[in-house]
Length: 262
Image (cartoon, rainbow, N blue to C red; front, side, top):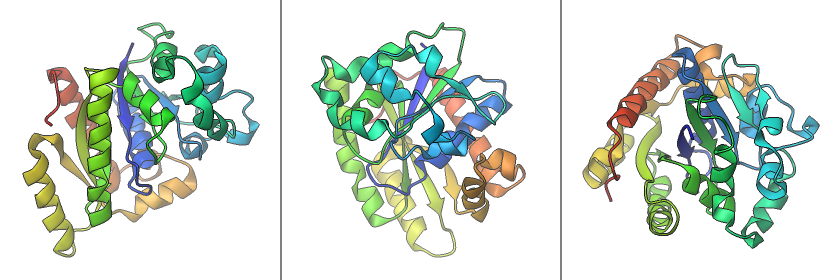
């Protein structure tokens, strides 16, 4: 199975979908073939890749709950080099009953293993803003968890529950899971974000990625345009920062550390 990265935080609005999409585009720019997986019932990632969720006959929900062939569900997208396992209106229903299925935690991993190893180089999984069966599936399938967080009190506080979940998943389903924290929407105009970022560094050390994604209006505009920022504003600060992040993650994957810091 291709190296899998999940993007998750139980707090919404921290840049999960933006990061999944931007990194997918950055990987494609480098000739790396990504498969994006939209596990969020809101289907924003699907829509931002030029697909209309309501028009899709099959989605990732049919793969997880109904055993649909993932190869039949995958769609090419408006962004060159990116395929997606899309989400649609079926996802909220499956999210509520997924844990009734036997060994439900492994459904996504098994589905991804059905793709030939040479089909994709990386899998990027956009998770819902909650801790539930869909998120557990993502973490069980992932090699690396990226936790995007704003340098805000409530966003940082919510990391504790996410890291507790990481420990549970490692112990029970996926001992290879590692994590890294990504600071997003950083505002350097005042002192508060800088103070919170320094606290994250002191607390998590190398568990915090070096790349910081700053506030950039082009990121919001790209969302509204339904495009990754690298296509909408390729020379913007946000696009350059996500390219730096892609390089940092590729270097991290090459190192393949056995575990992430606790």
